[in-house]
Amino acid sequence: MFRQFFEDDKGSGGGTAPFAGMAQLKDDLKTNADIAAMGSFDGLARGFLDRGVKLADTEKKLAGMVAIPGADAKPEEVAAFYDRLGRPKTADEYKLENPELPEGVKLNPELTKTFVKTAHELGLTQNQAAALGKLYNDTQVQAFNAAKEAQAQAVVKAGDALKTEWKDDFAANMEIVRRAFTTFGGDDFAKYMNESGIGNDPRVMKTFFNIGKAMMDDKLVSGEYGKTTPKREKGVLEYKEMK
Image (cartoon, rainbow, N blue to C red; front, side):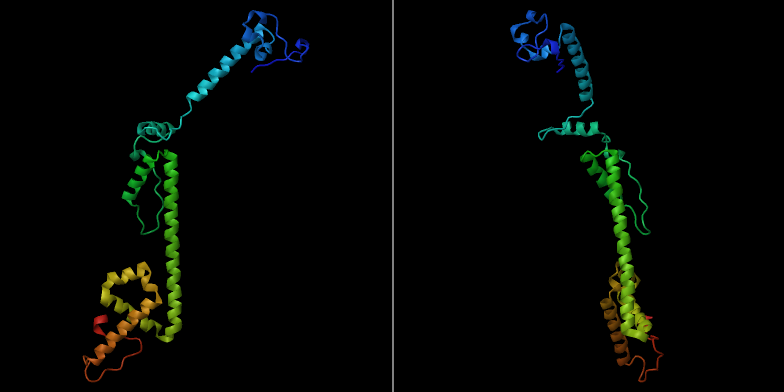
């Protein structure tokens, strides 16, 4: 309210005294303190105009605002709300950043398609979807690099453990392990064991070492090499099926 108190207009009761001309107003307005505070009809008119200007400004601000749909809002009302916030018209219009992926890692087109579809359903804007997509990709790359580093450390640790146990026989025993891998699973199996990290487990390598040794011993016992077995140099395998 636009109140203006005049010290020389105060009545005996200490309130704001009515200005001249208020007697022409209706009874319920004659005692209105807000009107009396205007001091005159000119002040009353100016206050009215000022309020009109402020009201127009308020309506202008409200016109640019977006009403949040209620819990019982219809789907089309929710969709209109998302569109007003800046959601692309279709999921295909989202533009996502192509991340720098480690060697051997590729983007999954189906996963990207599912992501933009979900983003559109949730009403995400272009900037929101792009930021969320970047966060996801960065997290996946970090997780991949961390797993790769952990696997590399596991290889070193496993090698050190077997070197300590097998000592001078390490190189020869590892050759037996490699050939056992290849014999039972082929090159693809050996590759899988290496890439998955399973083959780096000392328990797995020792198991395949025992398998390889058992096959060699069985071959020798069967007499395939003749009644006498030629002396072999340490670490050199002569089991033809494992060469």
